[in-house]
Length: 227
Image (cartoon, rainbow, N blue to C red; front, side, top):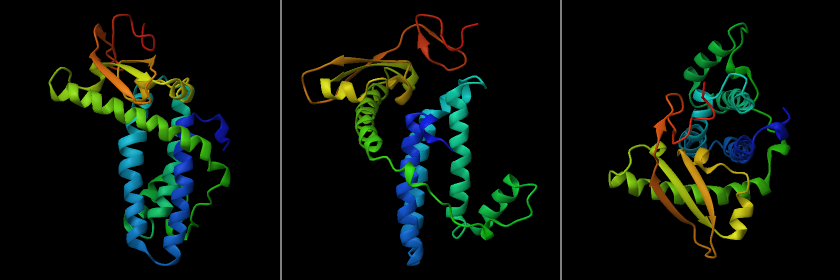
């Protein structure tokens, strides 16, 4: 798999898998199944469910079948399920065997006869990790601002919000080309230059019509789903 052709988000997740695999191999060799399972559970709940799946569900549900981003997402998900099955096999033996038999319907083989995944070193990308750590800080600030508006009943879901994100020049360079409306699951997001090092986010209620497909709200026709 040529990971250079994948979007940065998928490359970042592969980096996380690379580092998780190092811990997996270390804990498996010393039979430290408690820590091994805890690491896997944390990856599934925090990195996948609350982060990656939360962002990419819009792509899977709303992009066209020939969308390059949607195809990349499916490629990553196929890689992911193969890795997770082998990681979880010693812990969830019957569950992984059942899933494996459904995925490999024409192969009469057990998942417990498979080797653990061989994770390529090229998945390790420190520069990308550093960049996305900064992006996640911005995302967390945006989510906090959105939650305040939800708590006051000014908006319901995050898609009812538009964001104005104030960043300094250094952070603007780091976030160049990043769509924070996609990252934060809002209808729109704009970056404004600030002299302060603090990330300041203003959340306002989105106005206009809601797209029946992606549910984003805009005064103009939805560019993705206009007929």
